[in-house]
Image (cartoon, rainbow, N blue to C red):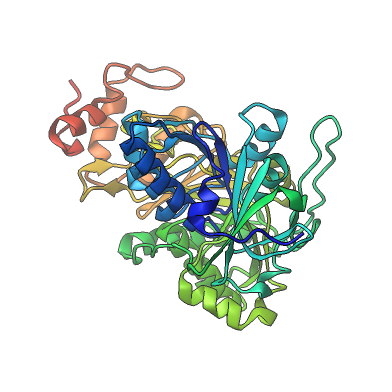
Length: 494
């Protein structure tokens, strides 16, 4: 059968009010662009006529503004999961104009197959190749694309001519069997390939193919500053020390790193530290710094779910595909983030905290415990199953008005039982084998900003001596002071 080529506006007509739509890609890398925008325009027009139009939206992770942003501004989202980072969508979620449920990224695809969540009616995916045999080759991100394509009744493909067909061979598409038939996932080193180079579907389900020519909407991360550089150097120092102590094998272990400027700083510091051997990565997001380290021979291989990189780095890969093809593999997120694989490979995991407390608990998601920032992402998939789990954070935010380390986190995403190491620009707190009060003193002395250390010590003095030394009356005094005056430094424990 011939492929059904049409415009984005025509393809959008396949999506109806009340439908549940799954989007391919992971971050803006590989996310669809033209069709979600056309759906948003259709929603706006229907709303102007007094007609309802809202859809449920599943994605791999965040998307670009032409997907999450356009749909949010059109008030076209009924519910959304599992991760987002768009400011307009964030406004919708925090005003309860759209429902959002946070989810570990490794769990979404299987939860869909298990029937725990509504079945996707339509899948919209970006591809560099689609053919009459039902072969769909993703572009720079995979996400949940294989599962939604298999489950949805209708598939819309954006054939993005800005992404070269030479990307075929970079993907490893694999879906595990569901219990009770599931076996181990046969990834024993990051470079193992266990699946196919494309998503294979019944071609009759492909109801529309929309030609596009749109680059990924991957924004630039903030430039490295002195704080992020010092955090990166501290991570490298810690890992170097662990190697010399024999607690990390001399051959080193695979790295998982979160996304953002701190992650780039950490990877840059690891690359510069010649006491750390060239290493492999088993992660979700492959960032700009990884590409440079590959060319320098410092990163030997990177397994991920997406190439969340700038246009210049992507072009570098395209221009030197023969060099990069056997050094990068892109997988579905339930494989890239799989807890079983993470524990078996012995990953050193490095993620960023929004907020930590003096006992080692981590808040990754909520500002002052109420406002959703982005979501938990894959941090929980990796943290709980790490060989060594590391959390990094600048010690302060908002020009010192906020301490990133507080007496009690205002929202709990990762408990003290999963967090082994906390690192700020000031130092390294090793929490392994320490009681709650020992952890508190370790974090205060090693990681808290000097301006807040007296405050933290005062809090402990005013807390009841117990296994975990808290004063429930004062635990959130710093948060309350920030909401009242805009500066935690004004806190008085009274």
